[in-house]
Image (cartoon, rainbow, N blue to C red):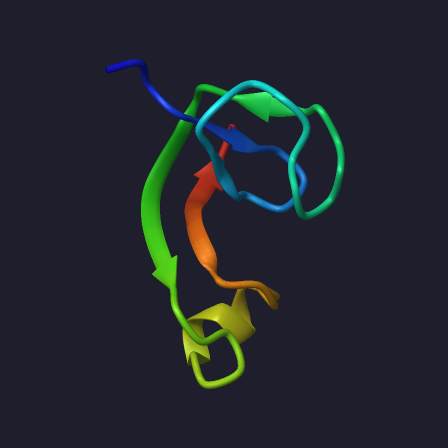
Length: 63
């Protein structure tokens, strides 16, 4: 299994190296650490602190 890449703009973890479905940019990096799964961004304190508004799997830090 290939290592997933994370969008440098919004930190969303991507399955392929195409454009990010949230911010529509092609700025992915294979260098990321940590992972957070957001199910309900409106109720999640961590998602609010990270400014996440869409459910999904995100990297905590992208290099």
